[in-house]
Image (cartoon, rainbow, N blue to C red; front, top):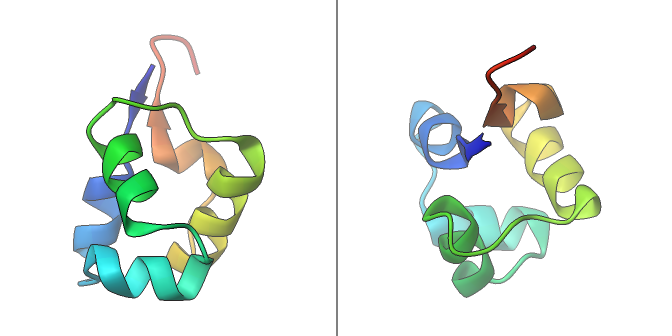
Length: 65
């Protein structure tokens, strides 16, 4: 599964720092998630989706949708 937070964040013209402030998730954690070094918790994914105004399923790529 590929996480697509970076793409959604860039489409909204948000920096990692701005996303950190809006979600309450540390910039370091967001960076790890975007780079595939850490998997997001469901609660984190939900917060990110709300801030980016997308569905949670839009934030990841699966072979079977």
